[in-house]
Amino acid sequence: MPAEEFVAGWISGALGLVLGHPFDTVKVRLQTQTTYRGIVDCMVKTYRHESLLGFFKGMSFPIASIAVVNSVLFGVYSNALLALTATSHQERRAQPPSYTHVFIAGCTGGFLQAYCLAPFDLIKVRLQNQTEPRAKPGSPPPRYRGPMHCAASIFQAEGPRGLFRGAWALTLRDTPTLGIYFVTYEWLCRQFTPDGQTPSSGTVLVAGGFAGITSWVAATPLDVIKSRMQMAGLKQRAYGGLLDCMVSSARQEGLGVFFRGLTINSARAFPVNAVTFLSYEHLLLSWG
Ligand SMILES: C[N+](C)(C)CCCC[C@H](N)C(=O)O
Image (cartoon, rainbow, N blue to C red; front, top):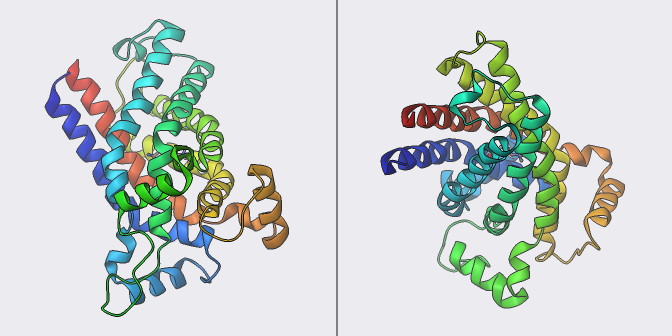
């Protein structure tokens, strides 16, 4: 496996991520805080209090982790398909796997990547929710000084298990929805590509973008619960568990709570996943 291409894949994954991060910060804030009236209000307040930098809080860890998380997801997906259908990536255009196999392989990849993602995602969410402006003399410092300090504080206060707060909700969110992700991607590619041929770059971009949107739409209800459970360690409000978090959120805020961040999740998902799939396909093609 040539190293340059791995680096290229990581960079394009990272590019997608940087592009999507401001949307992600607004989403996390809308999901876990009640001070904002909507997307625009949240953007304006964030900009006023924290400048453009506010939108990029909590980004360094996801950038560092995307190499691991993406390789686990795509690596496990492809190897699960190999085990299920006995075809390698190159053979799959000529002998396309069934959608059931694609779904099972996607769920397997999703399940395993969720565990790699959990601690990074927790730290990201905690940092994104710090609304204090950057170090102004005289103002109280934010609780976490950065990702390492955040990880160390959680570890000290709660031990290693603390770093996996919300991991269950994350696994439940990602296992089925990554199955949906790969099924949507495969289905759209096959619609626009003559049998046996490799999909064009345009097709890959559109199919990747819509795969991202579809899976995020399906994932949003559990995404809200996941973010709330990750924040629960900090706020006074503690949930008895996943179900308790669902029920009490719905009771207090109505069923609409499960769709918080849906618009913004979808807007972010298109560019991020178009770029991710394009680099994935290009790398595999160039490795031959
Ligand atoms: C399964 N779920 C919808 C949660 C994520 C699927 C897309 C993953 C991609 N890295 C992204 O950040 O958009």
